[in-house]
Image (cartoon, rainbow, N blue to C red; front, side, top):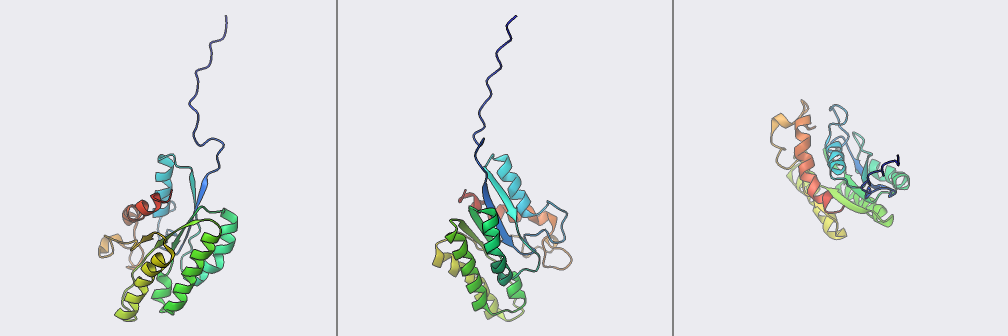
Length: 199
């Protein structure tokens, strides 16, 4: 008896096509500080990409405590290693909390943007607010840097990654600085539309 013909299989639209790379360069707010592994906003977005059958892989190169200077030092090697198509820069909070010169912070972020674009990557910049520990003027100038860089480089900006939860005490760990597990989905929801537009 002749063997039955195998049922045709639907072609995988991503078969044979290498996944595009998203590189996250951030600090503790992206590095799952104080959280169980794979519960941070980066992982939540990675899951959304997978569910949406997007041909993207995320490399989370965030390190707790990193400043913009640290990120700038690490970025060239990361760009060579990942060949990133999109670079998400989430740095600056540690510069601000330490009262480092804002001109240096802006220069470091500008260099990171330029390095990423020179490698052909799109850039998404994530903004932050800091408490007025060093005065309201310093805090305001700190936050304004993100919008200035986004405008000067014509790149997308998430104005404030903690939008909607910054004043909710229950969304932060005991230190009052680092978001809880419950805060990660709202953070992902804030960042996702800006990232999705680049896919």
